[in-house]
Image (cartoon, rainbow, N blue to C red; front, side, top):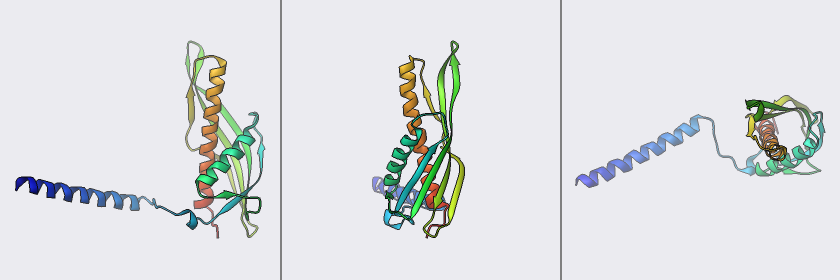
Length: 176
């Protein structure tokens, strides 16, 4: 009888914990949305200008931004009514730590100005948007290893920037 009471008590406790977690998620503003419920179905990328000294950053941005659109349930189409253009304004590669007079840890930040043209002809500008998190990499190896890790970190920074732009488009723009 004592074992049966313990099982019943543990089941009730698990049920209460599940209800508390569910109510916590609802109170934080998180919600699950279907892609069919998104306010925008497709986007056209009209142009990306690279005003940084990092060659090829605009091509990387277009590829990664398109991938992130697809992951968010938004297609990229030349006939889309929503048009996004970007100006990549800054690419910062900073040293975070030095060991034996050599840089061993680096951070990358990418800043952009985004223009979103809506179907009704109005535009929304997002100035100085950057990746939300600092992308870092550690390398004290040869120049090839540093460059390889830098390329990986740059792609992560562009991916984070793209995700932030898409979130701004969906949640902070009155899309009808």
